[in-house]
Length: 212
Picture 1 (tube, rainbow, N blue to C red):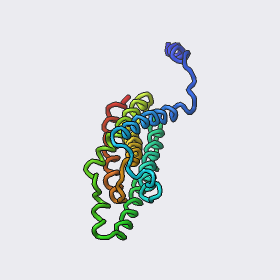
Picture 2: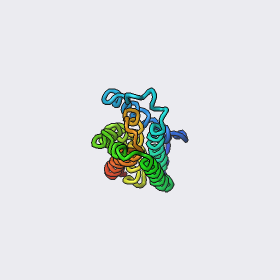
Picture 3: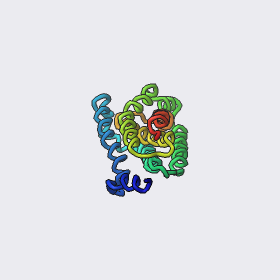
Picture 4: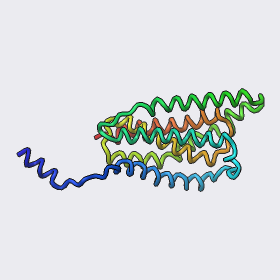
């Protein structure tokens, strides 16, 4: 009876392409990232000096930091979306990356004039920056959680945390094209706060939405 049931259940199985999982996850991020980018352009527009900003180090620091966190979250998401998935190094690399940004921020502040320090830390948008990042990350987080529901993460909370880091880094990367702040400490504090909120939200939602 058991053998007959197994034969019946497996008779219509179709092979899955070996790259189906990354295609699903990356496709979800790309599609939702376009939505977030369009929302950013309609809502905030690009920074006023977008034509000259790529000639500054802070532009590429924001670009690289947020993109690196998104990549680390993406690697962890892909690994944890499988029942046997386990990975440690992205969780170790993320704090080291943040530490590097803090060191760069201290170096920048050490060379700044006294009246330049507060603008480099607080800027003019510290009260809204994290929440703008959260808002732009929501489409990406929703798309990732929907994709992960089609998979089988063994640890729903950790998988949700990884998806939140992926989404938060992506949302922050998109926001960086609208943000004209020039402080590395601003980046270390307020960008990181926004990404952390999205990561926490991903963990909370993943705990309930990704159980199987």
